[in-house]
Image 1: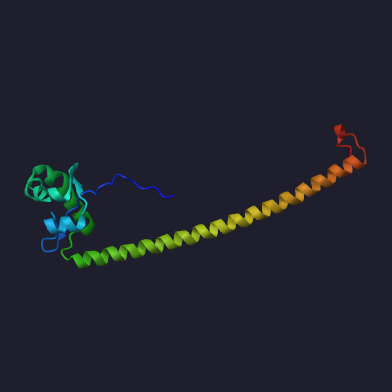
Image 2 (image 1 turned 90 degrees about the vertical axis):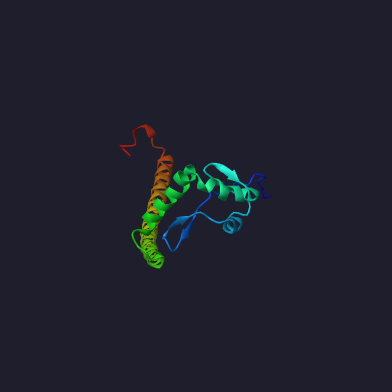
Amino acid sequence: MTSMSIIEVLPNYCPKIDDKNNKKIDLNIRDLQIKYPNGCVCCNVTYLPRKYSSLIAQHFNTRKHKKLCLDPANEIFKVDCGSNENILDVFDLKCKENRELKKLNYNYKQELDSMKEKYENEIKNIRIRFDILQKLNMELQEKVLTKNVETTNLIDF
């Protein structure tokens, strides 16, 4: 049985990238309707599709929106993109970084797999030794019982 949630969690509003000015800008009404068909949350206020016109006309023009939404988005964008003016160069740079990270992840996985194999083999050897010791112990116990040796002084045995 699958569980369904009655409550839908609306996503946080995120401005779009302006390729010409190389910064983040607010969405227009069409972009809002496409990206957030059920509504979104901006500056801790929920905006449903029927309120998008007031979101654009009133909220986007406030200092609060600029301070809590646009400025942080632009800072993150600058950190991610650096001083590059061309968004394609930034994209290529990020792709190269991702390839390097994938290589590192692959190498780490290989190292973990080899360590796992090594320790599994060591555990097998320990189990084999344990089995041998257990058999020896059983044999010695049988000898002790068959010879009716007093178990209080096994050193003399």
